[in-house]
Length: 336
Image 1 (cartoon, rainbow, N blue to C red):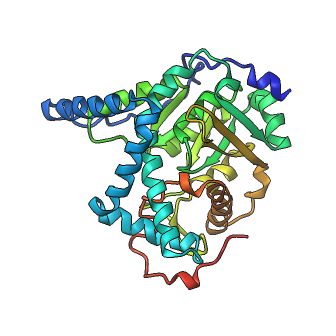
Image 2: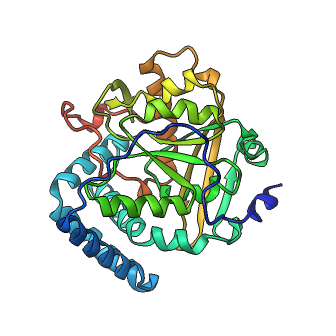
């Protein structure tokens, strides 16, 4: 049966969308300055992304070494985050993970669009190895049972490519919550690019009104809830350290009982081959009686487990603990 999944074709358009009212997305300004910024960014990323990988990879390595000095605020937050997750790491090891985070983010930024376009119409197995637990295998073979799936993941690996796995396997349409850039041209480009792989976008504002209806209509929601929440947050440990955590996932799991797929898409040494890992499928009953803080703590445990699979591919540059008290690494706890 796994072989049959690998033979599925990656479609060139998203599946039919449910007749559910969606919140309006604010594209941002569309003036001359926004257009110039868009054209400059597209020329830069498009030009660099077209380079052969043998040239691009060393260039990414040089940029990754330079950026911590040029970007001290994000680099400082990332070091703090890495030391929290790996309190026994030496300073040199922290710097190695930091450089890997920059290098990976640059690689995703430059190559994701070309990869998405190249994959369209091709067999799933040409690009992805599926590493599915038994429950995930059953879910994929049953095409999500046609009854909606609640996806739980993080800003890890090639999260931009996950729609190219979920959609051909029948777990679609897939919706993700985004914070659009403050540039209408970039926003439109991002929406078009993601739609090509079957990933549709919802703005943060108003998403919680649409997500329950989408789940009930059979869609998959892709929730990346590993970043610091700024509204309506609850406190829960993340890598053993108190953090502002989003309560969306726990609320949805209780309000709309659906299978919960824990997953990530990880890069490999081959620049055009990826591991789609789904180590577990959770039943909604596991969240039914939990308080918001307990639900967030359970979500964080699963996210931590994913991150530990490939810490060099995680988005450590997000200042996860901004506004929190200083933290001594010796106090941090390793997640079991």
